[in-house]
Length: 294
View 1 (cartoon, one colour):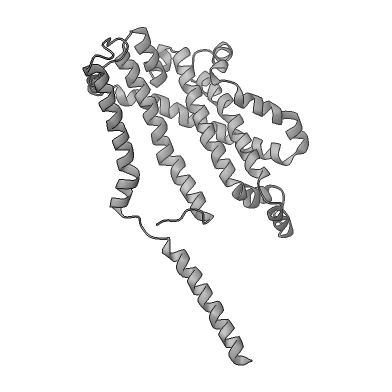
View 2 (tube, rainbow, N blue to C red):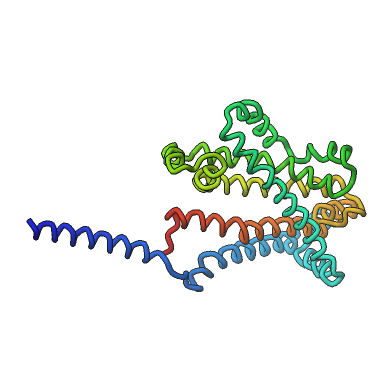
């Protein structure tokens, strides 16, 4: 009998050791070569292919009108001139600072609003459909009333960002909370985690994947809303952001400037995703054992 118990304990110990080994095997730093070939090289190759195809359209005179499609060299010269004039970073900072600050405001409003809608049935019935409708409303629709209400100033820009981003953040959090297993909530109540404490320690951590998806969508709406506001409501008092640069290129019939603005807008969107949201996603997945390193 004793030998059987000893054998069972040994088997359990070996299983536990195996599980521990399995967990520790996935930790460790990814080799630089693997990171380069898996994450850095593919977008570089894709960019090179696009540039070659673009130049081919010009070289073989498939598109021979520079007012419709400038060459990569013309767009590169536009970047070079903006850099030498010291305006390139100003364009980026003007828009990025507005976008990030407006997104933080939207985060501060959308998070408690999402909690309220998710946890209070009357509030969900009252304003839940309104939030969904606002989320589907094009951001550009808010620019004219915002200009009339607030004038051509930064407050108008932030108002457009809030109206575009808050519904996405709130709906993302509502969706995440709806997917929280009821067992978690009951266990939290049993341990005394109710009210604000339960929301902070139980609901928000459990709803984090859906909430993060809402944050990503909220940032996308923030950035689009800001670009729409800068294009439509350009003014010398507002400075020249990326949207205003795009509009200036259109007014000057300069396709190289238009492409410069488009590439900068695209670059900022990719950079924010890689620097902020992708690390957050990896952290959430890793904390739940869903991200396995090879």
